[in-house]
Image: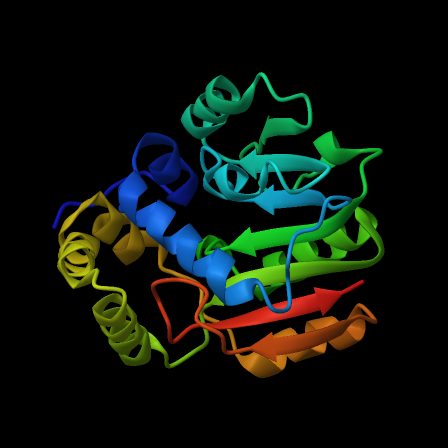
Amino acid sequence: MEETDKNWVDFWDQQSIMDDTSWNKNMEIFMTGSQSFFDFKEDDEVLDIGSGPGFLVHYIKEQVKSICCLDTSPAFVEEGNRKFGGDSHIQFFLLGDNYLDFSMLEGKQFSKIVCASVIQYYKDINEVNTLIREMKKYAQPSAQMLIVDIPLEAGIVKDLFGLLKTSWKQKYLTRILKFIVQSYTSEYAKIRKKTGLLTVRKEEIDRLIEDNHLTATWRSDVLTLNGARKHLLITF
């Protein structure tokens, strides 16, 4: 397999390992699975980190007060603005190479923050800590942040089983088998070999929550096609 000079930011700017149908299926599962503890209300001001072109926006745009979307991909931000630019309560912002610089949010405060299937592309646990610290600055009192799809250590086999089990239940197995093959044979696989995917220990995350003086609950709900992944619900 040839080496590549690209990193994860480059990859997500140019392509995606999942098609729009699969991303929308993921979002459908998220909306159903999170409704009991993370439901969106009409006065919510929502921040979506790693939004893509607005998969979450499609589901909640009529339910909430405002939505702010952040992504590292100029193509996704452009597509989001093209789709939703006519709605004054929806904004898309581009994250730069320093994807933990949220200065474009200055003056904004959010009641709900979503960070789904993102932190596995971070470099280390310190970047996760920076994310949480930064979000604390932009969170309304008692705001909730849901970090979805946390890649815990020793979870590769469990991840694979979770994907297969959930996709079988969702009658989505054929597409997931294609996704699994692509994840080991595509440009994604080359970058993963070079850069890796972040895995963390639950104890590390718990320590970050304690150090930042926050309250958090681990959730085992099925919120994505990867039904084996854990999620963290933080209250600011």
